[in-house]
Image (cartoon, rainbow, N blue to C red):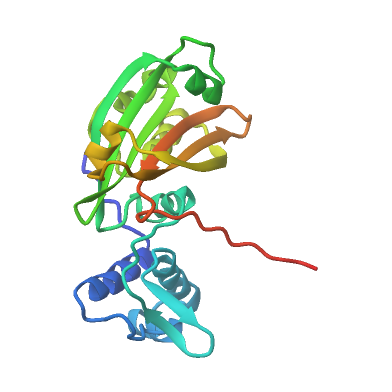
Length: 248
C-alpha cells in the first residue's frame, strides 16, 4: 500500500518560507516583512490564510506588528512563552519545537509514582507510572530539563511512551491519537528555587543558580488527568506571559 505524505497546511508552508528568509538574514531585524495583502498576492492565497501565516511568526516571537506601520522582524528572542504555544505548533505543524530547538530523551521507564505525582494524576499511592525525562536545547544550548508523568496503564495503547525515541508532535498529541481521549484544560503553576547538582550539570549552570519550575497538568473532559509535567529551566531562557483585558 503506498504511503501518504503529510503535507502541512498552506499557511504553515508560507510561514516556513518567511521564517527561512529571516534565519538566512535576507530579512534582518528592523526590516518590514510582506503585509497580509502582499503575502496573499505573492502566494495566491486568501487574506485569512495570509493572516494565519503571519500569526505563526508573531507567536514565535520573530516579528511584531506596529499599528499603522506594518509588521517588522525583531531581534531573535531568548525568551519563549508557555506550553500553550507548543500545543498550537503541534496542531499547526505536527511538531512542538521551533526550528532552532530540539529535545533529547534521557530516559523512558515505568516506575512507582512519587506521592506528589500520584496525587497530580489522581492515582493511588504506589501506582505504576510512565516517567519520560528530556533535555531541550535551543541552538545547542540546554534550556530546559523536564519530566513527563503519565498513568502506566496508557502504555498498552501507547507503547512509544516507554521508548526513548522522540515523539515529534508531543507526548500529549500522541496519547490523544492512540487513546481517543481529548485534553480540555491545562493548568500551570510556576515557582523558583535553587538548582540541584544534577540540574546544574545538565543545564550547564554555575553553582549556585536559580531555576524556574513549572508544574503543568492536563485533564480531559471528565477532569481525569492525562499528563503531569515538571520542567526546570534557567530564568534567562524562559518567561511566562499572560495577555488579558482590563475592564472598568
